[in-house]
Image (cartoon, rainbow, N blue to C red):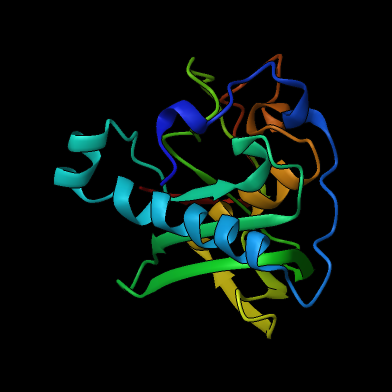
Length: 184
């Protein structure tokens, strides 16, 4: 089981590396790592489990955050119509996206970042993601709103990009023209 002690913090070199593709079909070890990422995110949202094991709540986690530089992410998040997006993916990639942008009104946070980075993080409002599930089967997901933002945040981790890299350094709360503001 992944705990907060397993999650590396901002400044660790692995967080700035481009993660390696996972060879398909995935090895048992890779499947185990992928499933443990999803288990962490699900457990972190259960108040009793999170308190018992000292887990910081999160809606997504990428393998580089546990110092495994491989292209794996897990997301467990509810969309705007209470639909659950619970996915653990190997080699996820954005295959299409909207021109329209979106951002979280409250800003973004990260399990690997302890300090606060206030500001708007511009993201695509809608994305289509392709990847492979734990069984090595191809999955294609269309996303919008918070789930779209979460997937983009986690895929950024696979490319060595942190959420605060997207924040305007001069004016962090500069209005984003025509972007959708998402409440969380």
